[in-house]
Image 1 (cartoon, helix red, strand yellow):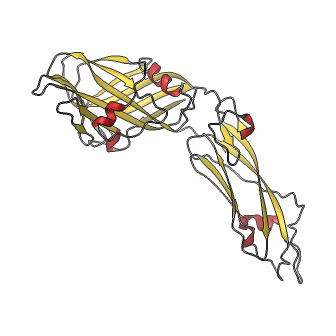
Image 2: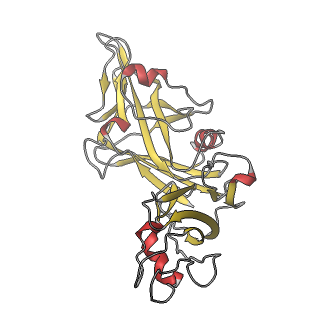
Image 3: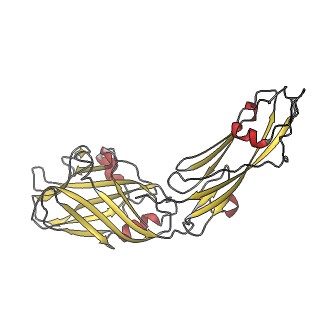
Amino acid sequence: MKITRTSSTSTDDIFITTDPPDEYYPNIYLSLANFNGPPAHERKMGMRFTNITIPQGSTIESVTLTFTVYSGSSTSITGRITGQLSDDSATFSSTADYRSRARTTNHYDWVIPSTVTDAECSIGPGTELKPIIQEIIDRGGWSSNNAITLFLEWYSGAADCGRSFYSFDNSLVTLPKLTISYKGGNYGIKIAKSGKSVTSENPEDYHFWSAYRSKSVKHLGSLQVTTTTDTDSAPVTNTYTHNFGYIPQFMVFVTSYDGGYVNCDYSSGGDYGKEGDLWEEALLVYATSTEIVVSANLYSFTPMSGTWTGLARTYTFDILLFMEEVETS
């Protein structure tokens, strides 16, 4: 599988200068340079990529980091690329914030080729950056849909030269782009029980836990609702967290353990109401990129004729979800 991500805000791709002059630039092009001054200083770049939908423990196969050149240069320089040692990196805010971020042990020293203005300049596709991404994905707190930050900093070369690249603020079609090819994942798709988290290592906390990221999964969950039909009762809501990293597709089928009919009598006249006529009024199911939410409110029911007797009843719904994974890039 392969995903491609770009920076998504002004503060996701920035450059700073060393102290002095200790400056922070989130709103212009990106710059890597070494100047004699005055004052003598270096320029260093940081790039954050969000919504990395790669499950923890996946095997990284290849990585490509692509820039579009803002201003061309033929002088030979080398920049060192590292990653932020973080489970889910935040956007940048200052030079102090940039400097405080822990770096990966793995790095890659990129001998940057001669560049031409407005042309693309890439590392990969290949294995050069693979160890950096792998180190981040293998962290215990990593989860699909988290963010990855990479740094490009001066390593060697002639003084008073560098490279500059387009950023988010220059053009949405020329901003930095990260492409990752990967396979597997050491726990695949997970759907947690209500009140449990997808970070749990206990199998008992899950409705579904696959060994791999499969193309389709099934989930059977239950929602029990106790309601008195003649008094106002708040909806009952269960939330099931999942690790798809996007909004899954699903279908819902509902039955009741109460038999073929909903067990509420009318005080006068009319037939029993079939549960198939009623559950659609009371049940709300929807999904987000992190949760499946099931809510029931049986007080909303009204009889076809007559009035309810006011019996307190408990209803159990079985929710069967068929999810079809659609990997986006």
